Each structure stands twice: as C-alpha cells, then as structure tokens.
Image: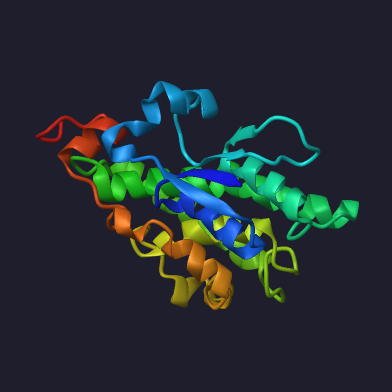
Length: 231
C-alpha cells in the first residue's frame, strides 16, 4: 500500500492523478497545510522540507523496508518505475520525459506559483512583481505551446510530464492567461488530458477537504506569512 500525504493543490494533484492513472493501491493521509500540519514532527520525518505531497510505500520497488519519498518530481519518477508505465525505458525517450518534468519542477510550477501569489494573495498590488511574473508565465506558456505543436502530449505519448504540467495549467484564468487566444496548442492538450478518466479521478481526490485555493486568515498567516489585516 502507498500512503499519500496530500492536500488538493497543483502539486498534490500531480500525485493523485498519477496514482489513479497507474492504478496503484493507495490511501490518502490528509495534510491540512492551512492549519500547519506540514510542520508536525512525524510529517517532517517523511518530508523534511515541510511540503506535501509525500508518499510512503510499504512495498517498495526491490523490496525492503517502507520507503518515504518527498518532492513531486521524484515521486512521479518512482511511481512510473514501480508500475512500468508513463516513463519510457529507451534512453532518448526517457530523458525527453525527464527533462520536461524538470522544466515543470524548476520553471512552470515555481513561476506560476509566484504569479498567482502576487495576483491573488498579495495584500496590495506590487506592479513590478505583477509585470515580471505575468510575463514569465506567458513565456512559459509559449514554450509549452511550441512544444505541443504537432503533438498530442508533451513527449508524444502520455507521460508523467503531462501529469506534472496539467495541474498547474488548471490555474490559467487566475494567472491572467488568455489560453484560447494565445496558446491554442496548450488549450487542445489541456482538453485532451481532461478527457482521461484516471486524470479526472485524481483531480477529484480531496474535494471533501474544501474548495482548492480558498484560504481563511489563519491559513494565509501559516502559508504566506500574512498577519490578519494583511501585514
């Protein structure tokens, strides 16, 4: 059994989508990041960076003691190797997927996260930050749109690269992205992925925990360092 330490966010959805697509047995262990549960000592033993998602696999690849893994990219690679799907064995194709996974981890996710922060959560507008991160979000969408020209999926066949990118593209409206007008290949890919039953099931995991992205004052203080009143 795989224990998924999880909250419904783009990074959390990467792993719930992967587990559903891969048809692996798992159970969700909620980590309410708006109430600081990611700082609990027991969780820090699994994820020392106090971030979810993380997993513990009771039956790891190769046997042995239960294996704990944090960082969503590392988890995706591990799960793909465990199930033997969504990460090619042939070297060129394998590293094509891995490099686009790293692109999401190092670029798309962090930059969209910053753009969303300054657009949605900042207590007051910061024009320089809004301009800087909006332009970077648009640049990254352009990179992805160019990559998807003539391709159904990022690396030809559906892979963990798609599972990593799709949950972040969900946020395109709050990112100020005009996807239909400016990034038609991303729109086509986004809609194609959305038709996958496994992806849809993974996206629904944790809906009972509340609306994704909603934060009260306490959650903002814990997650963003924003004191009540916005300071």
